[in-house]
Image (cartoon, rainbow, N blue to C red; front, side):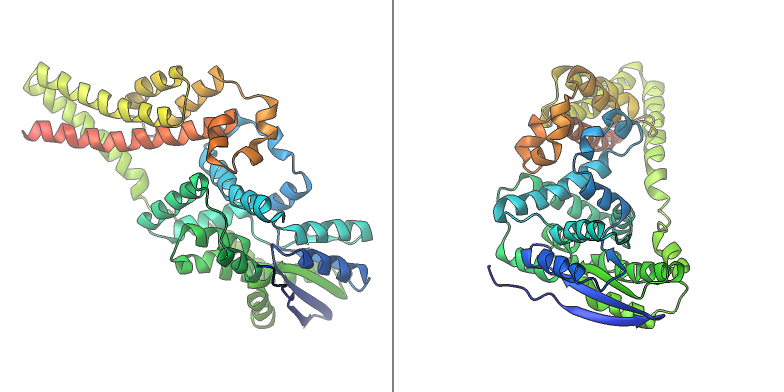
Length: 398
């Protein structure tokens, strides 16, 4: 476990600039020290880091979550992305607690050392949100469920980070290691998670050199990216702007996820119409089935998220109605009710990252609980919609 890691170095000459690629270990103190040592030498005109603007902002503004507008997050439909980000952060927090090492310390050292020396810091990685969306779109729907369930399992587990995972962190990429914990077959994530980012970062370096004249450039990256970036710097002759535009695009979404909910609504309403045409009693039984199953499962989700009793009642009432309009989800209603009856305090925002490192903290922290209420009640309503639909068809067929 205490085996020291030797940081790999590689040099590439491009357009008259000597580029030094430093492959770092995300959980090694020596990596941060090596970064400081290289920048203290005075050899470099600039430093590039494996960060996107949002991750850079999180490092230089660690208290940024305190300013989060939970109502805006709900209104703009960003709850799943924020929740996923917090869940990923929980893994990093577990590392920090177990080993006393804050992942990404070498990036922080690069930023601070560059600022002290008056050197520009170049952010070369792709936005984390784009990467996560491309990962989500790159796998089939059952693999998405597997990843999401693994992500949730990572929250509730109390297991310590294994030595194998730590060694993987020393040799690879933080995101790759996190997703590898959630997926035993992480090879299907390799292209959007590693290879695309290798090419993207190489293109960003080439673009920076086109815009500014640097004689020497230090590039601080995870060791798992060193070979790929080195190869793309030498072999990829596509204009960097074209590469960046290509890799920033979202794959075209399938039409079916948008069409299916409306088809279900059409079938349910048609079922009601057929039921009432046969008899009033049958029609009302179908309506009761719809309300009890859909509302019941949505309110069960709210209960599992330890929602306020008023929120649970709101889930039961809202779910059967919102399920007939796919534009509005039950989670939006339940999250709004929960945030109204249990208004988050300033301390909840300031402790959000720390509390969400453990599942108990998700239920204790008001902000985190609102996110859970949104997700659990939405899932309950979604499952209830299909189960109630099948129940209606069963009654009509019988």
